Image (cartoon, rainbow, N blue to C red; front, top):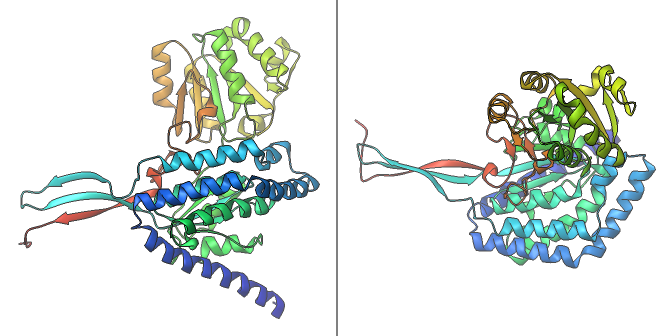
Length: 428
């Protein structure tokens, strides 16, 4: 290893450890900040966001030009692109979080023991949270606002393609902290796009970072889960399914499938596979396919479906395991709900599934047997979103089973401690 490389590595390591030290100190102060102070910071941040639209758009334009030159896909460009409406929506999301009840200090359970001890379980922040995400600049604001409201310090590491956009949004969040008299280091961003910084965050900052939350594709999640030396709240890919049962209302099935796939194809809640009962091909399929094709969606299916409809391209086995994040939908014919559930169990990612049906017993079986974080009935998978759940926003959709599952919002960014009141009791 040359001296220049060693110097480079030590420089990044030093910067990262400084971030960690500052975040740990800020977390201690933020953990006992009152709700009014945190809300002032959020209100100010949203206001700065609206005043800074031109500045944010200028930064985003540079990111978009660079991303296009690198040949990013349409779905990735859609995630990256900001406009005035989207920035207004980001500011609205910050205000929505501000208006939620403060999750810190809640007594979630309380009981008395025979010896007179009064035991309370009280919600507390997690501490310092590291967020690693791909090129979605809105995550910078959502994650920062959620962590601030829940009393956590945050270290952000977004995708290199969104570095300028995220930095512009970060400036608004930090200005909000300053306006409320809170430490600016409560919200920090890794100051380099060097990938070595990610490795340091994952494996060499356990004394500063309490939990890592990755948000991105399968390769990112796999790396984080493999390399992290602190707990991980995982967000896997969104291999989401819509199942159209024979009892489904045809018009409802068409509308829900179209929305689930085509409203925004690049989000994790977009449907990637349609499961449909073979018995309703003659009554339901044509209108669903017409709507999808008219909207520009490519269909991939089995030979039986290809023979029935020339617009369907042959599906490969890999299609059932692919998160397209694009205007492509794989279609699988099933005989009943048992086959639908079995297909989801084999190929799903545990994210979000929906059943379109009127038969109550079928719906009940689907809801009980599908083991995903979110299971919908007669509704689009695109509702897999913390804002749509009334949670203000979310950092991601957790697909694991430990600590958090589904949208990771304020409540999921807290832990608890036990506070015990006595009157001089001693243990015999």
